[in-house]
Image 1 (cartoon, rainbow, N blue to C red):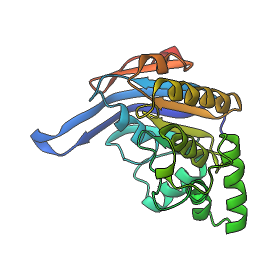
Image 2 (spheres, rainbow, N blue to C red):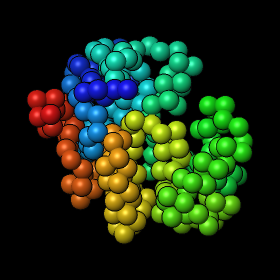
Image 3 (cartoon, rainbow, N blue to C red):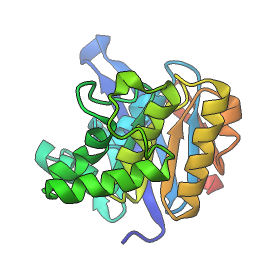
Length: 231
């Protein structure tokens, strides 16, 4: 179990490409997130928000500095190891939902448990429980194309929660939703956070960021507000 900081980045840099054409996306990023926090990462398009979230989620490596997830130094991990850590500790929610269109809501939610080796009957039962928590107990056998945008995002949240992660990473989770569904999603996140799950949300929407406990703002790949000194 983590204690204290669940996320610690110190002087993290990330570039794409090499030589004079390299694009330096993250510049000496320092960031601490305490266990149980609800944090938003904001900034204009191209400020490095999604890249930072990808580094935190071990979807992308970084060039220099240090990134600690709890007591683990995350650096140059083999994909197999990174995948195990992601599946064990982190739940992801994306703007585009990332649901498999040929699988039902129940099957999409149960998918992370398949990779954990949970038997089919058990993972299906747990998936239905999580859908019921999202108010979707009657939509479990529907395909994503048969669901509204708000319902698809709630399916995605159920999928993120089914492994009981300690950390939820959400990349523009309200970007494809209207105002009503966006606020409902944030209320859901608030409930999950109150249960002890740490949540980090990337958003460009000020009203969404205002609903988190702390805002971190990036500008040109640098933390300009809400850095470690304010934690």
